[in-house]
Structure formats: C-alpha cells, structure tokens
Length: 291
Ligand SMILES: [Zn+2]
Image 1 (tube, rainbow, N blue to C red):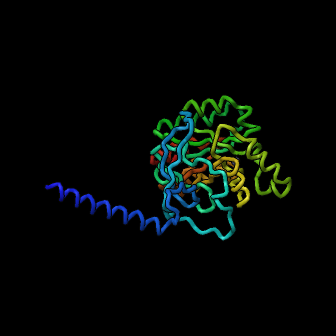
Image 2: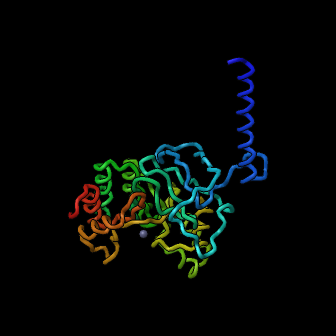
Image 3: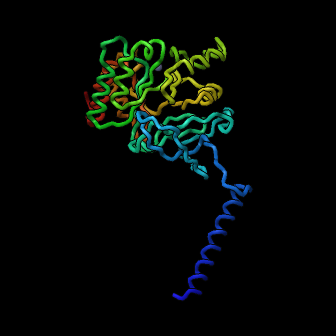
C-alpha cells in the first residue's frame, strides 16, 4: 500500500471517528468536555470486584455515561430525593464477580444483584453459644458461597458480641449496619424526630457501608438520609420468611419459601436468631426439596 493510500485511509477513519464523537456529544451533552456523570439511581453500575477485607485506599467508581434501563424498575409514584444532591456511597465495594453488580432501583435502594444470589442475615443470635452464625458460615463455606452480609444491630449485638464480628470477618464475609438499636426508622422520625434517625443510622456498625433499615421500613426521606450518611440502603427480594410465625417455622417451611422466592439475582433475607435457618439454607443449596 502506498503512502498516499495510507494517509487517505487514516484521514477517512479520523473523520468518521470525529463525526461519531460530535454526534454523541450533540445528543447527550452540549458541553465540550467529558463530564463525570454522578451515579443515577436507575443505573446498573459496573462491577468493582474489591473485597471488603482488603482495605483499598480509595475505591474508584467507574461512571457509566449512558443510563442502562433496568427492566423491572418501576417508576416511583412518590417523589424521591434527587440522587445527584446526595453524598453518593460506593455501591460496589463488597461484591465479587460471583454476584455481579448491585442493581439500584429508582428509589435509590438495592434489592437485587445482576448475577448469582447474595445471602444476607439480619439481627443477632439470641444468646451467646446459640451457634447459628457459625452454622451459617459453615453452610456458606461448604457450598462455596463467597459473598454474604451479616446485618447486625449495634447496641445489643455488634457492641457486645465481638466474637461474632470477628468470626464473620475472619470467614471473609461482610458486616452490615442494621441500625443502632433496631428502631424502625419511619416511625422513629414520627415519634422522636430526625435527630434520633441520625443516631439510629450513624450509631450502627461503623465498619460497614451497607445499611438495612430495621423492619425494611423506608420512605424517601429515610433513604435520602441513609445515603447522605454514606451508606448503601439495602433491602431484599427473597426470603425464607423465618420471622413469620414468631420464628417457629420448621426447616421444611423455611426451605419451601427459599425454593419459591429465590431466583437469579435475588438478595435473600434470613435471620441470625433462627436456629433452623442454617439447615434450611444447607438443604436449599444442596438442591433438596425437604430438610
Ligand atoms: Zn432486623
């Protein structure tokens, strides 16, 4: 190929590229420089497979320039705070590729992941020596589950059960913030005011960036305050329904709820105080239909 042909080909290519760039700029942004798009609640974020046990100096977020539609995200009928005005927490610190990315719903709350299943365990053991957390960890390990979050409330669990905190961390799993004293946040604002809400949020487990509101009760203001304080609000999309029937559901009943609700991408809610929970989880992960 002669030099002229090479130069001509390059010039044609450059022209094509510059046309593409300018046309995409015209569509999305009139400003000339590339803009760091803040995280928008409806985006699926790119995975940053940093494991929590590896303290990284500053997790870098990779913004996605074009919003990715989430098929199941529904428009919220209630006005929600503009995500751009919030201090945005890092939604991706804990996940490995096993569970893909968090899906952030339009209300700013995480309820699902993009692949695999994320198991989460709330509250605390009933008493020292109950052994449920150790049993859950054994089940997770036996089935090769790499990611799990244990949402502990602070005053009656995290602060008084350093053995559980250490056990969870040593196993490579993640501590979540479940509030200072498991006070339901929407009611807390109504009855005791916003200062107590801040206390409930910030008095929780400090070494977590994930917060599960006690009882799963949220409204747009609660979500805004959780995010403004740097936590990722996380609910769930499947559960073993273990607190129903005052926690007395049998292993088979728990298992039947897992079988009927857990799907690809689920965040699963279970509880640390339910003695039959580990057996039900083990049966589920073993593909059994009865305990
Ligand atoms: Zn709880």
